Length: 188
Image 1 (cartoon, rainbow, N blue to C red):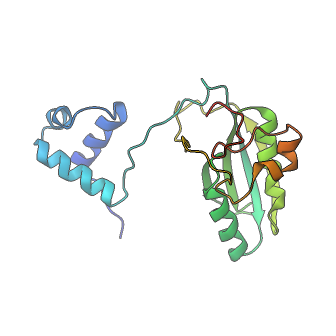
Image 2 (image 1 turned 120 degrees about the vertical axis):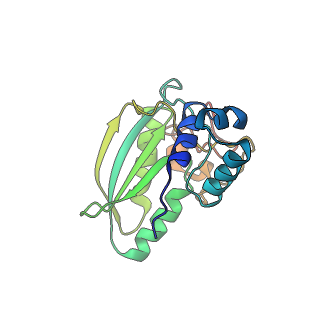
């Protein structure tokens, strides 16, 4: 069953999109409902995973680059494994399933061209997955900000289970490392 959002839900969402720091009291006034109604609606929208309140970073202002990569992944089990691994990668902005030969599309970011290229080349390590095409691009024009995972506490092992110091691309200064690890040399 598809969940429908009513006019009140949409007005609350619109208000938060313009300023997620807006007080509930102000949202209630704008929408024309009570403060408890806004709180209940927000709680329901979050609990039902219909909205996610997050902070976005302006990767254009940070000087980051992006690339869209299409993969052909052979087999459902391999696709699930690739999706699970990539969903943990801090450089992945989004993953889409396609219904064509290229059945996965991934939008990546990198702090510089060589790190972005290194990240894309690491996809060749997946058995049963082939790169169909790569389109390098500027950061998104719209929306200006994107949700990035940041890691104030760094680890020795990346979320994908790899160790940057063991990677030949990192060793040869082709990559500045994963933003989640202590060896990371970038601005995050």
